[in-house]
Amino acid sequence: MVIDAVPLLIRSAGVKNYLYHWIAALRRAAGSQIIRTCPHLDALEPLNHERSVAGPWTTSAGLATLALSNYTPLPVADWCARGADVFHACTLRRNPPRRVRVTATIHDMTAWLMPELHPAANRQAERNFADVLRHADAAIAVSQSTKDDAVRLLGLPPEKVTVIHSGVPDAFFDVPPDAAAAVRKRYRLERPFVLFIGTVEPRKNIDTLLDAYESLPRSVREEFEMVVAGPIGWAAAGTAARLSNVRYLGYVAEADLAPLTAAAAVFVYPSLYEGFGFPVAQALAAGAPVLTSNVSSLPEIAGDAALLVDPRSTAEIRDALARLLLSPDLRADLAARGRRRAQQFRWDRCAAQSVHFFESVCGKS
Image (tube, rainbow, N blue to C red):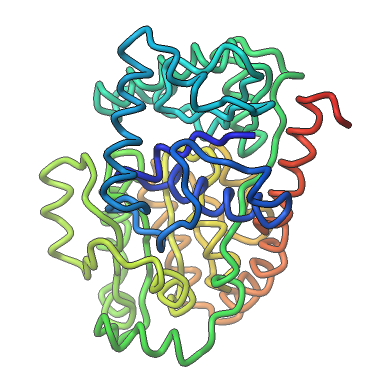
């Protein structure tokens, strides 16, 4: 089979994270000879969300091939899929191959549910991808919540969509204490801290989080620092400016994410919508007490291992933060629950289920 890996060549967050680890896990499960990619990627360079995981030539050729596929009548996707039983299309692909079975992964439906929070280019890409999904032989949804939204909004037959939860890199499950101490020193995090990780963009609800933190009693804010990590996306200028009032780390290297997460006193993620919520699953695995939203897929992923709040309520976020920060016993209980919950989100488990999915598509199981 061939996996459309073009998102690995561009600046991207969740989809890139998914593809990078999913391809590696699928190759461990089924072998590199079975799991091919378009463009051809023998060995992936270290994951970096800000740049391509391939060299300049492969990156340029891959993006040029995508453009030819999307904007010309040439059967480029069929060339990419030659010899394969299945072509797994990515969200950037307008014209998948016509001579093989086509599948795809549905990551979220936020551009449909909250179009006002997305640039026009994102909304158009999602409309194009919807056409691919409607004609695909089958699809993976990364959560039951995402499947339900896709079925309702796009009219997809429920039996066409299989829920397979994404995974968490192994590094998050066993962070050595000295690694957490080293990352605290590297970023000069001297006080206990509340951590948010994610692209700074409207859906992540940063302004409400900052309002909640700023409304905590002064004594709590003096003890616990607010730390925000992640690149500036399409955030409003006012949101970006407010980050100067807290510890804003910007883009954090992938190798630092697990120890940074494990070092947090509380991990907070009041997103307005998530298809899966990688930062929450990763925080559960790292043993960070989690506070997150009670909407979309987040209750499905967090289970009983997090405090859930209305993300549009500053008061609820503030009160839950205060409750966590002032109760070491509650933090310890949630940390233990989170580690147990996160065992459901192993990439090898995701890969095994995905292999079964592809075998079913091909009529082999």
